[in-house]
View 1 (cartoon, rainbow, N blue to C red):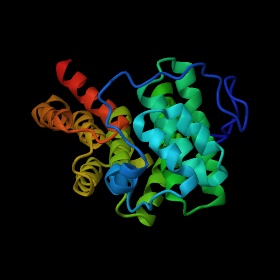
View 2 (view 1 turned 180 degrees about the horizontal axis):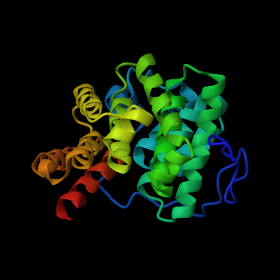
View 3 (view 1 turned 60 degrees about the vertical axis):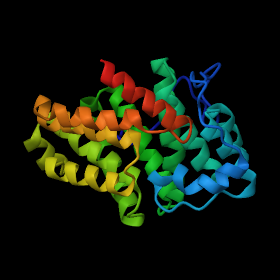
Length: 276
């Protein structure tokens, strides 16, 4: 199979949602309340990691309200009703749900594959669409973690992730999440194949990873996920010698006040990481 041939797998029918049964709910009662009015007022804060995003058109407002409340399945349904205009919502809600809440590994991987396919097709049709490029890279990166990074690199997925994220940053230099994700890519590849092979084969460098993490957090300093990714990157690159710094990053993430359901999930992950 060619490295970028994403054929449908058993849980998927092209153009439809995977058969996942009942979607899990966010298990915390203190998810911040979001409605249409607060969405408009807090839009930039809610999307601070994704550069300069404009508020959604009227038909998608309810979908984004659902997403930020943690009603991910309903958000996906609304997004898919609106064709290409709703794909950013559908892909983000699917990817976030799969990453944080789906416990069945086969379904989780199927969801990431679906996001990668949808976003990849949109990026082919709209090469400058940062949302499509970013969610394609995010989904492929999480899928790679699920099948093992070494196997994913052998399939050529690493190059696609790296290219998509670099393209996002070129088009949208204020996209904090893309900086963080690209930093994580560099760190993960170095950790898995070693610094020499990583540099020669994938152009991955430890100093570049640190620069990307720092820039991402400069753009969005209150990103719980970004703080945790930086912490994990430091440990992947330098081992226990950076444990104190990694712990401080986790502590900062755990102390943040979440603004929506995803951030509530991130804060809980940070607290769990500190207790391990």
